[in-house]
Image 1 (cartoon, rainbow, N blue to C red):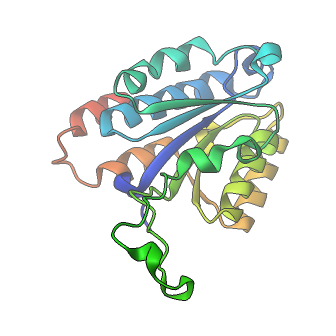
Image 2 (image 1 turned 45 degrees about the vertical axis):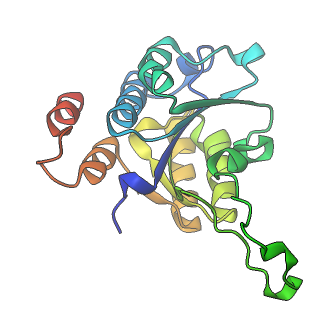
Image 3 (image 1 turned 180 degrees about the horizontal axis):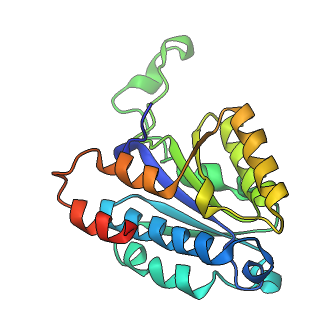
Length: 208
């Protein structure tokens, strides 16, 4: 199963100024988070930026914040400040699901057992997830999204923890729970699918 750009949403978890310096392999992780944000802007993928208690951990780190400006300009960026480790506990799932369109016509006049629930409009069920710390906020958010019946795709080279062991333990647990593990380049080329895509050269430049 390949990742489909038309069914994808990107969630970036807690790349915050006071947290990042304590984490493992920060330069590469931040570079890949920036690539993901720019890919999402190029390919029009809705994105949610999470921040854990920003009064204590600070705002999103400047390189990523700058990379999300194109998403904000295109009205593809939403932000969620949270206090729970899992973003789902603070309303992430509701943000990722479009509002249910009310049933039209006289459907409400039918007996309850004959009424059909209105379908969710334009649902993008594939959540591409990256962030920090992998074994805490990212993992708890991912597990909760799986419980809420989203498909979860974790971008491993854009995730970090304070130690490599904690990061890798999170990946093991997530894979066992049903999340798909992939890399930034895998996201890019699965979103593109072919070299004739109008954004191919722009995406290729980001990867190089």
